[in-house]
Length: 153
Image 1: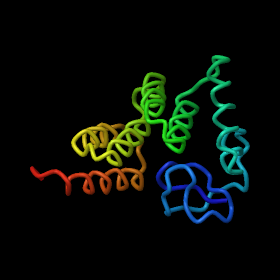
Image 2 (image 1 turned 60 degrees about the horizontal axis):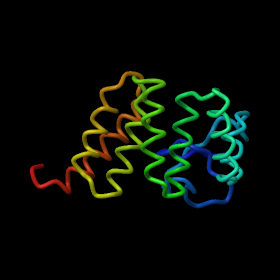
Image 3 (image 1 turned 135 degrees about the horizontal axis):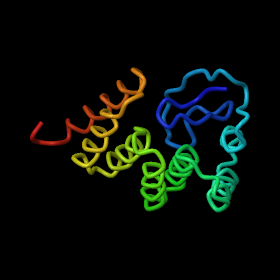
Image 4 (image 1 turned 120 degrees about the vertical axis):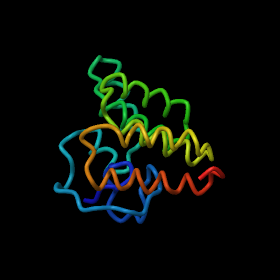
């Protein structure tokens, strides 16, 4: 099993790109199939079932920042950008120091051509503690991509 370097979700075997964010960069995962049921469903390409399962966790007051961020990434895969924003804000509310919701918001804003706002979200993510060197580099690369589209840079 491999995980996507952008959304950090498992990639179903045999798929050339991530089914969630369409990224082509993957790394080997240290597990065959995750024990986490939501991730297992995603790894089996059962995205609609995974979304329903994760929403049910939230409805039963078992949400966490990780669950809400997974919902945000799945909403992105379904092109429901309002839900992406809602779930990212919920993930931030549950863990205000976590960089990942800001990375996703930056990614969505970048794809929408809202370069300045994307740079702002990436900047917030880059200032959060606990970001791995690889993830920090990914945020830096995405920021640079955005800045090439902003005239003042």
